[in-house]
Image (cartoon, rainbow, N blue to C red):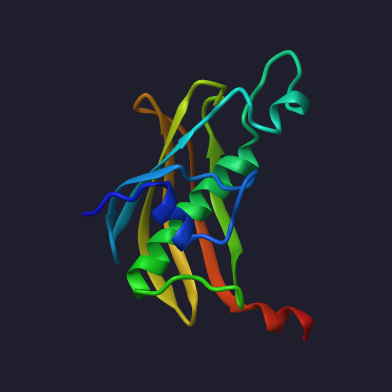
Length: 152
C-alpha cells in the first residue's frame, strides 16, 4: 500500500484545476483498491451556483472524484502514466445512489475496488464517505482511448 501526495496524483491524472478532484491518496493496492481524499472547500468554483444559499457538492462531481480515483488505480495497476495522446473516459455508471449532501468543510473519502477488466473496459465498485458515513456509491466502467480516436 502506498500513499501519494498531490504531486504524485498529478502524474497519474490528466485533470487539472478546477476539475482535479483527488487531493491525496491514502492507500493504493494496484490490482485491488484505492482510498483517495478530496478536501471540499468553500472556494470550489461550483458552489456559488449550486446553491447560493446552501452550497452542496454536485453528485456528478462526486462521481467524477470516483472516476479519477479509479483512473489512478488503473494506471498504477498497469504500471503506466497517462500521456497527452490518451484520454480516460467513462463507459458507464450503474447503481449510483446519493445518501447525504457533501458541503464545504467536508473531507470526501473515496474508496474504489477493482472488480475486473475486459477488452480495455475497467469495472469498479465505488463508495464515498464523509466522517465514516456513506454519502454516495456507484459501479463505474471506464476506458482509456487514444485522443486521435476522437477524430475518427
